[in-house]
Length: 245
Image (spheres, rainbow, N blue to C red):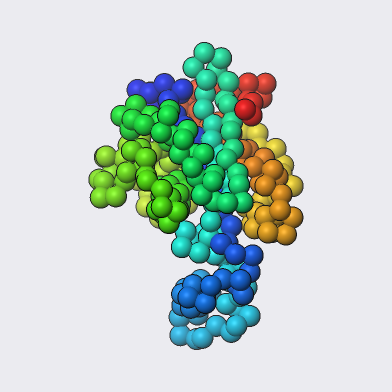
């Protein structure tokens, strides 16, 4: 199916998310009550009542992965230029989530409007990135673009979403493979970062370093693109043809 599309029609994407507030005590009382309920499942304390400290700690550790309690601080995208073959990268980052979402939507609504022609690719995007993104768009009162109108769609109606995790499963519903492991087995070079996914919240809330987060996010976009090329039996994009714009 992938051979039917030009690489230049594929939008590679990755998100970075953090907790909605710097700490649990800064969360609105109403949402605090909901997180207290959620924390029983996060901490796997189904019968016991978590302590106040456990609830607060679980918020800082896990709130970022839930769209109801987290927010997006960076969306990095990449596309292969049709004429030069370059993988061009761009990041949308902002402390005000709605601002970066609007900037991202402007690009999508201008260049990626047709699910029959445009593809969106990422690792675990069907379970995480795309649902999270759509929920945060709705929460911020923004209209979903056509390519993300997914509610009620059947699997064969969302073929424009390419998930490298799903491709690697080959129908195995219980199997999970990290992007880093796929890069390793395909011998895709992944430069060592000074941060990993577990550190994004600290880098954002304590260091307020969005640029550092964007660099990390863009490297994941590059890795996804290279892994997909390997899966397609194509040559990797050389380092001198990977540029941030």
